[in-house]
Amino acid sequence: MEFEPVIGLEIHAQLLTRSKAFCGCSTAFGAPPNTNTCPVCLGHPGALPVLNKQMVEMTIAMGLATHCSIRSFSLFARKNYFYHDLPKGYQISQYEEPLCYDGWVEIELEDGSTKKIGLIRIHMEEDTGKSIHDVDIDTLLDFNRAGVPLIEIVSKPDLRSAREAYLFLKQIHQIVTYLGICSGNMEEGALRCDANVSVRPKGSSSFGTKTEVKNLNSFRHVEKALEYEIQRQIQVLQSGGIVRQETMLWDPVRQETRPMRTKEQAHDYRYFPEPDLVPVVVPEEWIERIRQSLPELGLERKRRFIQQYHLPAYDAGVLTQQRAVADYFEEAVEALQQPSPDRIKGVSNLIMTEVLRVLAEKNIEIQDFPVPPASLAVLAELLAEGTISSRIGKTVFEKLLQHPDKHPEQIVEEEGLVQISDESALRQIVEEVLEQHPGELQRYFGGKKKLFGFFVGQVMKATKGKANPKVVNQLLQQILQEREAAAQQ
Image (cartoon, rainbow, N blue to C red; front, side, top):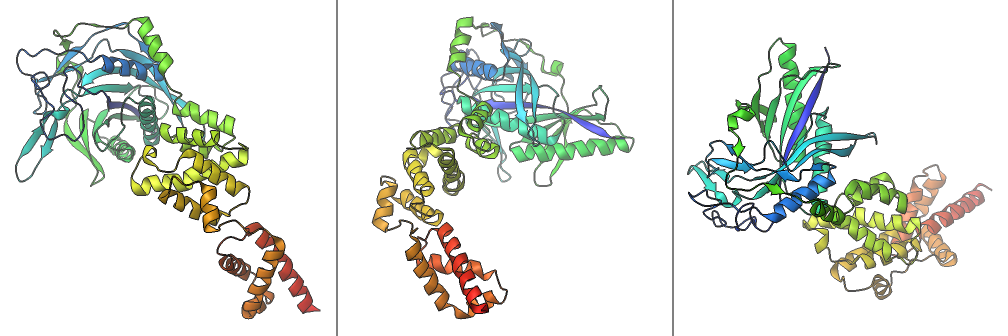
């Protein structure tokens, strides 16, 4: 029997507000343990919460970006459970009436097709504290994170493979970072994911028994954990067993899931309306104001880059993965004197090969990249015009990194890097190279045609990389043919 997986994700995104969800404590990451705390977020008796308005605005923005309906009237609820990093003994969340509901997100599949993944809800809640398990001491608690505002994005069970779940999470990551409402840093816990997964016979419309896989703090972990859990459930069913509804923990070292506890039901949390907070009332004017402020999102921008700049889909996807990189590209294109397709493609190539390489090597963001977009545009034009070769272009790029205030043309002039395209000058250099390597020349005539690349390399070496490769290739072919014909007479 063939089986298919049915997957839904619950994604938690920490919002980039300056203060916590219900108090004035800072949300800054990395502060000394238990310093960003107060009686409200520590759950002291008599301390009353006050709702952070920016939290509501960011949640509405996410709802609009994912085609959700926005409730004009929603409630907070208490989600009751005991855990040592939950100081109040309950979490302020939303249950029956979330702020955003019934939306969808479009993902691009590997074959170029698209698929809409439905959203059940996006609701507001507060984060818990953080447990630090120290073998030599004991479990330590840091409550700096307690009360940090979160949104929980709950998808419909529309995902049918681990890969689709990976792509969906990547798309959510791109949306929240484009909106500027979440850093998306999974290592710091700013974006976290739990996955509900079951399997059923292919063609069946009923659902199997689901498990929830926790501890998924990277895109790869989501994909690997789901691949493992899907196969585990299939093996259980094929051997005549029964899949139990339980919470599973992903072990990234052993690359396996293992049971953590029996899966809770909603009634286990004893939800009831939060008595210390009034309902959230959202006027239509507020929603429209937020709608007007939304940026062009990544997938829309990718499609525009393909249409407007005639870029390949791959280029457009890389350039629009991060909003700031896409902004840098467009600023460079605007700075081109002649924004022809080949020069725009040249800018794209420089960003994808050189700029992104530097960002990865130095572990910096594009905002910290020293070379201005206008300088990169000039470099692209120098390459397109044949003023410098691609090899010299790399040299100029490295010089720009060291002296970002210098103009690329100034560097080319000062370093004497102008490409040699004069045929008479290059013919003389080619002739000299061939005279200096008689043995290789005889072997070339004897059938070792791969030595052609050796001769090209020697010409480039003799000109310190400044020879126009296209002209060198043409001249070398011509001269070698002439010499070989003469030798056969």
